[in-house]
Image (cartoon, rainbow, N blue to C red; front, side):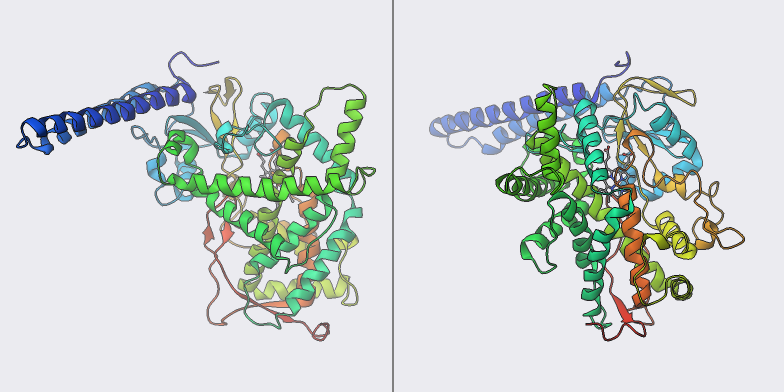
Length: 553
Ligand code: HEM
């Protein structure tokens, strides 16, 4: 329901786009008229100065543009009633975006402290509500899941004229519901959530470690290698095979995913000003982002589907793609209406890769960095592995409950390093939280950093201290209210896969190598780079083989 006092962003953008189009059309008109008139005058009176005509055109353009801007401001300046408070005054036209010239992180954390559990912002003309405590996060996405589980269309932006309501990540309503539930059902049938997926992950871990050992302890940037190893696990489920680390075709896609993840921060402002796409240039790098997205979907996701189809339908057990088609056939045979089709499948594959590679591989890099900064914790983890697993075999999932310290160190690294914002949700109808109204059409985002790193939840939240997750006997405690994987209907469907990957990669890594800085006197920065998740700045690390593991390659 649209509030009486306000206009929807779509209406405003429509009026603004029409006004801008009229401006541009009238400018062209005026320019042509001016040139014609000037040419005519020149032939009768060559002394008439050009400047007078050009200045007339320019003043018309300036006048109409100012009118358009003013109109947009007047239409958006009316604030809906009873919304959560503003932490600072919104500026005309841009709203609170002006406060983010040095990034969103600091202002959001400051405002959470000064304004409280939830506050409102204007991103251009779009109202956005930020959730800052676990209590309101839970109320919004669990208690009010019926109204707050959709995604804003703007999350996908304009993906080159394609319908953004496809796949899982960007989709809403019945399409999202079916793609998500069928995907979870297939992932479970391939062993997600059970230890039967572990041997597949362990195979990739041992190839990854072999490749790391070939670096012979030399300072190296292992980002691409780590991303490729993590992508291979999703690949082995989705397309039924892994790729060699030197496969140029595959690493090209990994790099495209990486570029896209880094661009998402600058491109995220683009949906607020969609009319910019009609102008030359590439504001907020939005066109580059759309190009990368389409490239990955067309050349990787669609190609993988085509290859699976041409290899024959199979029994649905070969890979995710054939299982998806098997489910579609089952529904077609029953005469059931379904959204399962090739386009949704391509975007679902994209969702799994986009959501699964950057998050998990970035976390592994953060863990390496923290271990380089805290060598005594590496020693403690290695001692625990040596005692409880030994050095003759690699750790497996049965060791998980025995290795308390590394479980605590993984959780502490998750807590301290990665969390920026949840993905945006949008309210389908007016929703009341803590007495405030969140009007229909409002974007709602959880500030995970404030939620899981607040002093209310953890003592000395800025300190890296895995011991906070151990009890007095040194046993690992899984805390309540620790929701880095999201809560409610949109929570991460890859959580159990990610946790298994992190445990197997990191225990095996520390069993085999000691992680040292590239230059002993200079520790790499712990200051994060913005993106969908915070990621470490490029760094080099030396992976020195531990005794007994020196000669294995
Ligand atoms: C350390 C690793 C990971 C973290 C921290 C993480 C965290 C998250 C978070 C916070 C969300 C958003 C929840 C929301 O919108 O409220 C999410 C969504 C999602 N994640 Fe993960 N994730 C991780 C790994 C994975 C993996 C390995 C996969 C799949 C293979 C995956 C697939 C997805 C998908 C498809 C969504 C979208 C769900 C939807 O829109 O319904 N994630 N994840």
